[in-house]
Image (cartoon, rainbow, N blue to C red; front, side, top):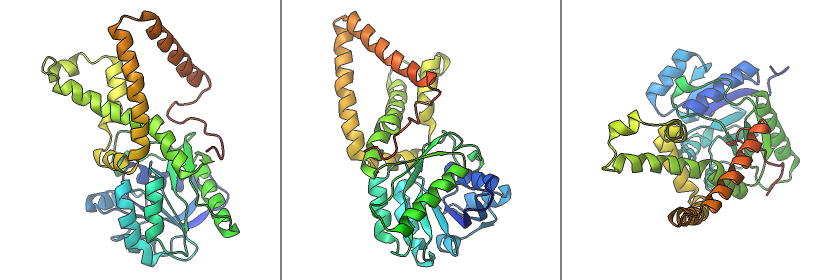
Length: 309
Protein backbone atom coordinates (compact mmCIF):
# COMPACT_ATOMS: atom_id res chain seq x y z
CA UNK A 1 0.00 0.00 0.00
CA UNK A 2 1.21 3.50 -0.82
CA UNK A 3 1.20 6.13 1.93
CA UNK A 4 -0.61 8.60 -0.33
CA UNK A 5 -2.39 8.08 -3.67
CA UNK A 6 -0.14 8.84 -6.63
CA UNK A 7 -3.09 9.87 -8.80
CA UNK A 8 -6.51 11.17 -7.90
CA UNK A 9 -8.57 9.61 -10.70
CA UNK A 10 -7.57 6.67 -12.88
CA UNK A 11 -9.52 6.01 -16.07
CA UNK A 12 -9.06 2.60 -17.69
CA UNK A 13 -10.30 2.36 -21.27
CA UNK A 14 -10.68 -1.33 -22.04
CA UNK A 15 -11.81 -3.72 -19.31
CA UNK A 16 -10.44 -7.02 -20.48
CA UNK A 17 -8.01 -9.12 -18.45
CA UNK A 18 -5.21 -6.53 -18.36
CA UNK A 19 -7.48 -3.53 -17.85
CA UNK A 20 -9.37 -5.29 -15.07
CA UNK A 21 -6.07 -6.26 -13.46
CA UNK A 22 -4.88 -2.64 -13.53
CA UNK A 23 -8.08 -1.58 -11.76
CA UNK A 24 -7.84 -4.33 -9.15
CA UNK A 25 -4.15 -3.72 -8.48
CA UNK A 26 -4.60 0.06 -8.31
CA UNK A 27 -7.32 -0.36 -5.71
CA UNK A 28 -5.41 -2.89 -3.64
CA UNK A 29 -2.26 -0.77 -3.63
CA UNK A 30 -3.98 2.52 -2.81
CA UNK A 31 -2.14 4.10 -5.74
CA UNK A 32 -5.25 6.03 -6.83
CA UNK A 33 -8.21 7.60 -5.07
CA UNK A 34 -10.88 6.86 -7.68
CA UNK A 35 -11.21 4.42 -10.58
CA UNK A 36 -13.38 4.86 -13.65
CA UNK A 37 -13.78 2.10 -16.22
CA UNK A 38 -14.97 2.09 -19.80
CA UNK A 39 -15.29 -0.59 -22.45
CA UNK A 40 -16.94 -0.53 -25.86
CA UNK A 41 -18.57 -3.86 -24.96
CA UNK A 42 -21.72 -3.22 -22.92
CA UNK A 43 -21.40 -6.68 -21.41
CA UNK A 44 -17.94 -5.88 -20.10
CA UNK A 45 -19.18 -2.59 -18.67
CA UNK A 46 -21.98 -4.37 -16.87
CA UNK A 47 -19.64 -7.03 -15.51
CA UNK A 48 -17.16 -4.44 -14.20
CA UNK A 49 -20.01 -2.78 -12.35
CA UNK A 50 -21.12 -6.14 -10.92
CA UNK A 51 -17.61 -6.99 -9.79
CA UNK A 52 -17.18 -3.57 -8.17
CA UNK A 53 -13.62 -3.16 -9.42
CA UNK A 54 -14.30 0.44 -10.50
CA UNK A 55 -15.92 3.23 -8.54
CA UNK A 56 -17.81 4.22 -11.66
CA UNK A 57 -18.38 2.75 -15.12
CA UNK A 58 -18.77 5.30 -17.91
CA UNK A 59 -20.86 4.86 -21.04
CA UNK A 60 -18.36 6.66 -23.30
CA UNK A 61 -14.59 7.07 -23.46
CA UNK A 62 -15.01 10.83 -23.21
CA UNK A 63 -17.02 10.56 -20.00
CA UNK A 64 -14.51 8.11 -18.55
CA UNK A 65 -11.49 10.39 -18.88
CA UNK A 66 -13.20 13.57 -17.67
CA UNK A 67 -11.23 14.81 -14.66
CA UNK A 68 -8.77 11.88 -14.75
CA UNK A 69 -5.11 12.60 -14.14
CA UNK A 70 -4.06 9.12 -15.31
CA UNK A 71 -5.57 7.39 -18.34
CA UNK A 72 -4.58 3.83 -19.24
CA UNK A 73 -5.53 2.49 -22.68
CA UNK A 74 -6.10 -1.26 -22.41
CA UNK A 75 -7.78 -2.05 -25.72
CA UNK A 76 -6.33 -4.14 -28.56
CA UNK A 77 -3.55 -2.06 -30.07
CA UNK A 78 -5.30 -1.26 -33.36
CA UNK A 79 -8.22 0.23 -31.42
CA UNK A 80 -6.14 2.49 -29.17
CA UNK A 81 -5.87 5.51 -31.46
CA UNK A 82 -9.61 5.46 -32.16
CA UNK A 83 -10.46 5.32 -28.45
CA UNK A 84 -7.90 8.01 -27.65
CA UNK A 85 -9.33 10.25 -30.36
CA UNK A 86 -12.84 9.82 -28.96
CA UNK A 87 -11.62 10.79 -25.49
CA UNK A 88 -9.21 13.54 -26.52
CA UNK A 89 -11.59 16.45 -26.09
CA UNK A 90 -12.23 15.65 -22.43
CA UNK A 91 -8.62 15.12 -21.33
CA UNK A 92 -7.55 17.55 -18.65
CA UNK A 93 -4.33 19.54 -19.11
CA UNK A 94 -1.40 17.80 -17.46
CA UNK A 95 -3.03 14.35 -17.49
CA UNK A 96 -0.80 11.35 -18.15
CA UNK A 97 -1.94 9.02 -20.94
CA UNK A 98 -0.34 5.59 -21.17
CA UNK A 99 -1.21 2.14 -22.49
CA UNK A 100 -0.55 -1.56 -21.94
CA UNK A 101 0.02 -2.70 -25.53
CA UNK A 102 2.84 -5.06 -26.43
CA UNK A 103 3.73 -2.97 -29.50
CA UNK A 104 5.11 0.49 -28.92
CA UNK A 105 6.50 2.09 -32.08
CA UNK A 106 3.49 2.26 -34.40
CA UNK A 107 1.00 2.57 -31.55
CA UNK A 108 2.85 5.45 -29.89
CA UNK A 109 3.02 7.32 -33.18
CA UNK A 110 -0.71 6.86 -33.76
CA UNK A 111 -1.53 8.08 -30.25
CA UNK A 112 0.73 11.09 -30.59
CA UNK A 113 -1.18 12.14 -33.71
CA UNK A 114 -4.59 12.20 -32.00
CA UNK A 115 -3.83 13.35 -28.47
CA UNK A 116 -3.74 17.05 -27.49
CA UNK A 117 -0.40 18.69 -26.73
CA UNK A 118 -1.47 19.50 -23.16
CA UNK A 119 -1.24 15.87 -21.97
CA UNK A 120 1.80 13.69 -21.25
CA UNK A 121 1.92 10.64 -23.52
CA UNK A 122 4.07 7.91 -21.93
CA UNK A 123 3.65 4.55 -23.71
CA UNK A 124 4.00 1.49 -21.51
CA UNK A 125 3.81 -2.28 -21.54
CA UNK A 126 3.38 -4.54 -18.52
CA UNK A 127 4.85 -7.92 -19.50
CA UNK A 128 2.19 -9.96 -17.81
CA UNK A 129 -0.90 -11.83 -18.85
CA UNK A 130 -2.61 -15.13 -19.37
CA UNK A 131 -4.56 -16.87 -22.07
CA UNK A 132 -7.85 -15.96 -20.37
CA UNK A 133 -9.73 -12.79 -21.24
CA UNK A 134 -12.51 -10.54 -19.99
CA UNK A 135 -13.09 -8.66 -16.72
CA UNK A 136 -13.37 -11.84 -14.66
CA UNK A 137 -9.84 -12.85 -15.64
CA UNK A 138 -8.33 -9.79 -13.96
CA UNK A 139 -6.09 -10.21 -10.95
CA UNK A 140 -4.69 -7.68 -8.52
CA UNK A 141 -1.51 -9.75 -8.27
CA UNK A 142 -0.89 -10.03 -12.01
CA UNK A 143 1.96 -7.50 -12.07
CA UNK A 144 3.80 -8.66 -8.95
CA UNK A 145 7.49 -9.19 -9.74
CA UNK A 146 6.86 -8.79 -13.45
CA UNK A 147 8.42 -6.18 -15.70
CA UNK A 148 6.69 -3.07 -16.97
CA UNK A 149 8.56 -1.27 -19.72
CA UNK A 150 8.03 2.43 -20.35
CA UNK A 151 9.04 3.95 -23.67
CA UNK A 152 8.92 7.72 -23.05
CA UNK A 153 9.02 10.24 -25.84
CA UNK A 154 12.30 12.02 -26.61
CA UNK A 155 11.59 14.96 -24.32
CA UNK A 156 13.81 16.55 -21.70
CA UNK A 157 11.44 19.14 -20.20
CA UNK A 158 11.12 18.71 -16.45
CA UNK A 159 7.31 18.42 -16.29
CA UNK A 160 7.46 15.46 -18.69
CA UNK A 161 10.31 13.82 -16.80
CA UNK A 162 8.33 14.25 -13.58
CA UNK A 163 5.34 12.60 -15.23
CA UNK A 164 7.50 9.63 -16.28
CA UNK A 165 8.77 9.24 -12.72
CA UNK A 166 5.24 9.41 -11.35
CA UNK A 167 4.02 6.75 -13.78
CA UNK A 168 6.98 4.52 -12.91
CA UNK A 169 6.07 4.91 -9.23
CA UNK A 170 2.49 3.90 -10.07
CA UNK A 171 3.60 0.63 -11.66
CA UNK A 172 6.00 -0.02 -8.81
CA UNK A 173 3.09 0.42 -6.40
CA UNK A 174 1.21 -2.23 -8.41
CA UNK A 175 4.09 -4.64 -7.71
CA UNK A 176 5.98 -4.37 -10.99
CA UNK A 177 9.64 -3.83 -11.76
CA UNK A 178 9.98 -0.85 -14.09
CA UNK A 179 12.50 -0.27 -16.88
CA UNK A 180 12.72 2.21 -19.75
CA UNK A 181 13.90 1.74 -23.33
CA UNK A 182 13.18 3.22 -26.73
CA UNK A 183 10.15 1.98 -28.63
CA UNK A 184 12.06 0.38 -31.51
CA UNK A 185 14.23 -1.70 -29.19
CA UNK A 186 11.17 -2.72 -27.15
CA UNK A 187 9.42 -4.01 -30.26
CA UNK A 188 12.43 -6.07 -31.32
CA UNK A 189 12.87 -7.57 -27.85
CA UNK A 190 9.18 -8.47 -27.63
CA UNK A 191 9.26 -9.96 -31.11
CA UNK A 192 11.85 -12.43 -29.78
CA UNK A 193 10.46 -13.11 -26.32
CA UNK A 194 6.71 -13.01 -26.94
CA UNK A 195 5.45 -12.39 -30.45
CA UNK A 196 7.39 -15.13 -32.27
CA UNK A 197 6.60 -17.78 -29.60
CA UNK A 198 2.90 -16.95 -29.94
CA UNK A 199 3.12 -17.16 -33.73
CA UNK A 200 4.80 -20.56 -33.52
CA UNK A 201 2.26 -21.81 -31.00
CA UNK A 202 -0.68 -20.77 -33.15
CA UNK A 203 0.95 -22.33 -36.19
CA UNK A 204 1.83 -25.68 -34.63
CA UNK A 205 -1.73 -26.13 -33.38
CA UNK A 206 -2.97 -25.39 -36.88
CA UNK A 207 -0.44 -27.81 -38.37
CA UNK A 208 -1.52 -30.60 -36.03
CA UNK A 209 -5.16 -29.93 -36.79
CA UNK A 210 -4.59 -29.96 -40.57
CA UNK A 211 -2.61 -33.21 -40.74
CA UNK A 212 -4.92 -35.84 -42.17
CA UNK A 213 -2.88 -38.64 -40.60
CA UNK A 214 -3.45 -37.24 -37.09
CA UNK A 215 -7.05 -36.91 -36.00
CA UNK A 216 -8.31 -34.21 -33.65
CA UNK A 217 -9.12 -36.81 -31.01
CA UNK A 218 -5.56 -38.15 -31.15
CA UNK A 219 -4.08 -34.68 -30.73
CA UNK A 220 -6.19 -34.24 -27.61
CA UNK A 221 -5.73 -37.80 -26.29
CA UNK A 222 -1.99 -38.11 -26.76
CA UNK A 223 -0.88 -34.55 -26.08
CA UNK A 224 2.24 -34.83 -23.95
CA UNK A 225 3.34 -32.09 -21.60
CA UNK A 226 5.46 -30.45 -24.29
CA UNK A 227 2.57 -29.91 -26.69
CA UNK A 228 0.15 -28.82 -23.97
CA UNK A 229 2.56 -26.46 -22.26
CA UNK A 230 3.98 -24.90 -25.40
CA UNK A 231 0.64 -24.40 -27.14
CA UNK A 232 -1.18 -23.03 -24.08
CA UNK A 233 -0.56 -19.52 -25.36
CA UNK A 234 -2.41 -20.37 -28.57
CA UNK A 235 -5.59 -20.00 -26.50
CA UNK A 236 -4.91 -16.25 -26.16
CA UNK A 237 -7.21 -13.53 -27.47
CA UNK A 238 -7.11 -13.73 -31.30
CA UNK A 239 -8.07 -10.08 -31.80
CA UNK A 240 -5.23 -8.88 -29.59
CA UNK A 241 -2.66 -11.04 -31.38
CA UNK A 242 -3.94 -10.18 -34.85
CA UNK A 243 -3.32 -6.53 -33.96
CA UNK A 244 0.12 -7.26 -32.52
CA UNK A 245 1.38 -8.91 -35.70
CA UNK A 246 -0.07 -6.21 -37.94
CA UNK A 247 1.50 -3.38 -35.93
CA UNK A 248 4.89 -4.98 -35.21
CA UNK A 249 5.37 -6.71 -38.53
CA UNK A 250 8.86 -5.35 -39.28
CA UNK A 251 10.41 -6.67 -36.04
CA UNK A 252 8.46 -9.93 -36.19
CA UNK A 253 9.49 -10.59 -39.79
CA UNK A 254 13.13 -9.81 -38.96
CA UNK A 255 13.15 -12.28 -36.07
CA UNK A 256 11.09 -14.82 -38.02
CA UNK A 257 13.65 -14.70 -40.84
CA UNK A 258 16.49 -15.45 -38.43
CA UNK A 259 14.47 -18.21 -36.79
CA UNK A 260 13.67 -19.75 -40.18
CA UNK A 261 17.36 -19.82 -41.08
CA UNK A 262 18.21 -21.55 -37.80
CA UNK A 263 15.32 -23.97 -38.27
CA UNK A 264 16.57 -24.88 -41.76
CA UNK A 265 20.01 -25.60 -40.31
CA UNK A 266 18.40 -27.82 -37.69
CA UNK A 267 16.40 -29.56 -40.39
CA UNK A 268 19.59 -30.32 -42.33
CA UNK A 269 21.23 -31.75 -39.22
CA UNK A 270 18.30 -34.08 -38.70
CA UNK A 271 18.17 -35.06 -42.38
CA UNK A 272 21.88 -35.89 -42.52
CA UNK A 273 22.02 -37.58 -39.14
CA UNK A 274 24.40 -35.01 -37.65
CA UNK A 275 23.94 -36.05 -34.04
CA UNK A 276 26.86 -34.00 -32.76
CA UNK A 277 25.30 -30.77 -34.06
CA UNK A 278 21.94 -31.64 -32.50
CA UNK A 279 23.52 -32.53 -29.17
CA UNK A 280 25.58 -29.33 -29.18
CA UNK A 281 22.50 -27.18 -29.83
CA UNK A 282 20.34 -28.93 -27.26
CA UNK A 283 23.08 -28.75 -24.62
CA UNK A 284 23.71 -25.05 -25.22
CA UNK A 285 20.04 -24.08 -25.14
CA UNK A 286 19.37 -26.29 -22.09
CA UNK A 287 22.16 -24.52 -20.20
CA UNK A 288 20.74 -21.12 -21.17
CA UNK A 289 17.28 -22.12 -19.96
CA UNK A 290 18.64 -23.54 -16.70
CA UNK A 291 20.60 -20.36 -16.14
CA UNK A 292 17.41 -18.34 -16.38
CA UNK A 293 15.64 -20.61 -13.90
CA UNK A 294 18.59 -20.64 -11.49
CA UNK A 295 18.62 -16.85 -11.54
CA UNK A 296 15.04 -16.95 -10.30
CA UNK A 297 13.69 -15.18 -13.35
CA UNK A 298 10.86 -15.99 -15.74
CA UNK A 299 12.13 -16.39 -19.29
CA UNK A 300 9.18 -14.33 -20.54
CA UNK A 301 10.33 -11.32 -18.49
CA UNK A 302 14.09 -10.89 -18.94
CA UNK A 303 16.05 -8.39 -16.88
CA UNK A 304 16.40 -5.56 -19.34
CA UNK A 305 19.10 -3.08 -18.47
CA UNK A 306 17.89 0.46 -17.80
CA UNK A 307 18.27 2.57 -20.89
CA UNK A 308 19.40 -0.41 -22.99
CA UNK A 309 19.09 0.24 -26.71
